[in-house]
Length: 259
Image 1: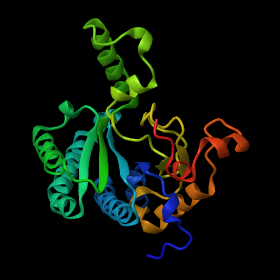
Image 2: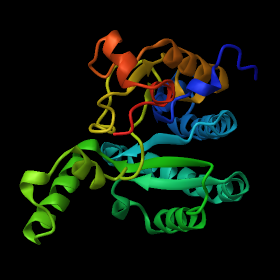
Image 3: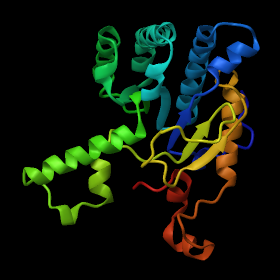
Image 4: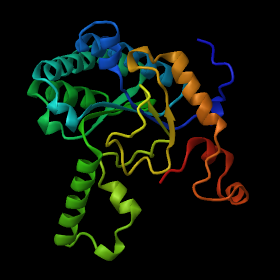
């Protein structure tokens, strides 16, 4: 597709997406929720491919929350089956295009077969450098913060850390996203105005973009609109425009703060 108006020198370094609306898409068409999830997988492929082509370095996809375990068993089983199929089908393409797969969340709750293929693809793609795709699976922002606090507490107990020296960097190092830049842009589909327990620490300074488009209909055109809107905004990080000129170089302003 044409990328008219998109400045590739000012792309977000990290885009995170709350992929919402599969069920509503299906209901509007008198189809099963599973059909909505199945078509949503096609949107995932389209957005990963476009991100790779234009140069997005990190793409995080909120695929399955801890709250989603409360859905009907049939739907959960179908979602796990779709995930297993996606990971199996996409690993060759990931290797071909240098895409590294990462996962955040509580993997221990995933079915054994899904956990095996997930860990296999993560290991297979470990050395890929062109782009990182992060799947949030059995993920909860609050749970991540609890686990982070437990990790810091253990370090203090074992004499590895001084409580007085715990700072933002120490906290970030104990999160699931350790070593990754925070998202510059958070996209939510389906029009819901909430973050749904996703990346609660990491999105402190993310630009938010909400679209009424349901996830199965979110493709390259809609993604382009989100990126163009991001480039129209000026990220101040609490500073005035005058201070911003001194604080940010053009490259940092385009890619977002690294802390």
